Image 1 (spheres, rainbow, N blue to C red):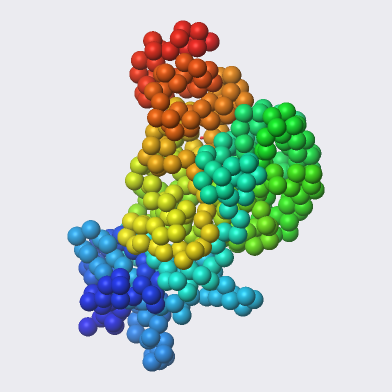
Image 2 (cartoon, rainbow, N blue to C red):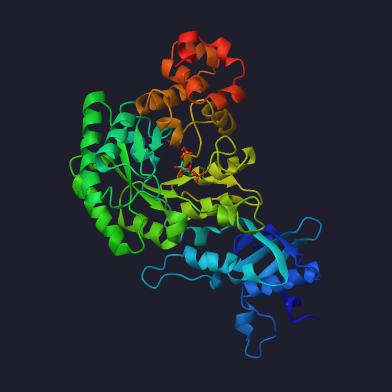
Amino acid sequence: MDHADRFIDLSLADADLAASHVLAAYILKPADGYDFLKTVTHFAAESGCGTQVPLANEDAFSRTLDVIAYQAEASNGLVKLAFPLALFDFNMSDGKASITSFLNLLAGNTQGMAEIADLKLHDFHLPESYLKAFDGPQITIAKHWTHLGRDEAAGGMIVGAILKPKLGLRPKALADAAYKFWLGGDLVENDQPQGNQSFAPLADTLPLMADALKRAQDETGAAKIFSVNITADDPTEMDMRTEAALEAFKATPNSLAFHIDAYIAGPMALTYACRTLPYFISAHRAGHAAVTSQRSNRGYSAFVLTKINRLMGASGIHTGTMGFGRMEGNEADRPIACMIAQNVAQGPYFEQNWHGMKRSAAIVSGGINALRLPSFLQNLGHSNFILAAGGGAFGHIDGPTAGALSLRQAEACWLARADPFDFAADHPEFARAFLSFEQDADIIHPGWRTALPHDITNQ
Ligand code: CAP
């Protein structure tokens, strides 16, 4: 008998454990030469109180905290573990739960076990008491919708852009790019590498951004939003960037939102921002594919990453384009966007009840343009999210104002279930998107060159 045999009990099911344990679903493959079930028991032991040998100083209490493997299917590698709640760390200061502790237990040392070849966390389920110990979002997309004068429950697509070029624009050029986008769109988000570079110091850029936003509001008569990147290595620096933004936007505080490069800067940066700033906080995820990629058999999935961002309190979360943009993903990623926005949502292995925790909004970005947007919307089934198009806005042949309008028109085209060629006939910015993104047009709408009027399809 292996000392780790006590860490497996295949007679248990989700329903026996869901109220008292954190449940986690993995796909596991043992390294060559290792037996599947034995590896599972060692994995379960290592996930909680156990290690590679029996421990002389274990006691009756510590054994009650064993992590148990309760499902193990050698045919497909599915392994489910149940983590007793008492294993998790809670804050000394306020008793709150901690994502750092959660990740440490569910995807910590076990990721490096030599007897495991593949180990990826695909889903998890939290019982009500533990879920409620996380902050969740304080500020939601309803704040933006209200600011924009829309329905606060389902205000439709916020036409947003990620500022491009992502690096290299001096303060005036950056503010000018934002201003031109705002003339047609609603929201501008800093691209994630944009910070306090020498050619665009924040002290110079932020006042010009605030001025550009005000001018765009005055000119259009519509509210606008700027999401400023405050990502830094330490909270003091984040505070300094925040203060600079608050000062620059003091005349239009409702136009301000904050942006965190949340995968690279980590849970502390996101949690700190969400706890200290009563503003919309968006979570970018640059770099996440190093861990979440569908081609990676270790780490955790994009679904898991997104779900923990809602727990930490992100108001908006980059959720990807589900195969309709230029980043990795596919149509089956739809539950990622549903899991953060619904009160009860089905994940790949577990249904999660959020027990009234506020929603996070999907931020859709990565290669989306007016031609790709309708199919994305068709797959998602609604347009209640924030679009953050970079090239799809600034790559429009007639500039960012036309780019913004083309994206708004693409949503309208989909909402009306209109024929894109008919719609293009009286929506010139949408029509010119065909010429702007010719390669996409050829794939999505072959025949567009003859279907659309000659003066639109030619430079
Ligand atoms: C988009 C973007 C975003 C990614 C993030 C970029 O620009 O600014 O960071 O979309 O991806 O640099 O790639 P484009 P995700 O619109 O020009 O592609 O939301 O999937 O994390």
